[in-house]
Amino acid sequence: MATAMAEAWMKTFPMEAKNKRSTGKSSRILDVPAFNNAWNIYRDTSMDIMKRFEYMSKCLDFNDKDTAAIKQSVEEFVAPNLEKILDHIYWEKLVNDPWLSRWFMDETGNISDEYVKVRRARQKIFILKIVECKWDEEFWNYVRWVGAVHVPIFGNEDLYIPMRLNLALWGYIHQYLFNLLAEAYKSEPEKLQKFTTAWTKLFWLIIDVYHIDYFAPWM
Ligand code: HEM
Image: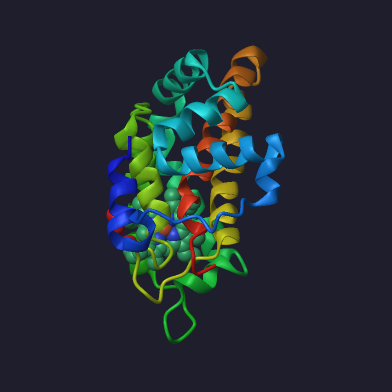
């Protein structure tokens, strides 16, 4: 069944919704069972976001225990430290990063505090959505949509945020959160491992879904 996102895609690119007529010649690569299988997985997990989540969860073994660990870490640690994490990322890390800082400069080359606040607020909305810990279709469509607004698919026509910048920003968040967790739970190594394992898997899932629309026809 096509998801709301797949239907929207087919409306945006009507050609995608048309039945393709075969030339009668098959693509030889698809005669190789392993490639055929990979292609079917790729197609199905691009059209159906919940299939993507299920498939990726299986690959990573993201399970109920991980969700429980994330919930516990949110209650104990992430929620009470959210403002600190955002302040560090935006006011210490990004404004000093040689590359990402350029994004926050005004015409005179100075950091625009006002704009940093805007970006920080956007990021906060995203993280608040994550810490609800509801991995349903609405959540994954939201993650996919946020990724898609960073490229011309749903963003402005002239907006294109290179993937490496997303990875850099997400990497900073990952690194800082893990350093804080390591400090907070240094006397509870098992708990620390449980939390960091679960968050690593979740970040991987999020980064995957976030970038689905980066592999669009204009590439
Ligand atoms: C994985 C990392 C990122 C996340 C989670 C994220 C999150 C968001 C969110 C939630 C929105 C708002 C969507 C809306 O409600 O309209 C947004 C929009 C935007 N983001 Fe990001 N973002 C990321 C990376 C980046 C990077 C690296 C840049 C630039 C260097 C950037 C620049 C923008 C711009 C220009 C917009 C659209 C206009 C706006 O809302 O101000 N984002 N982002």
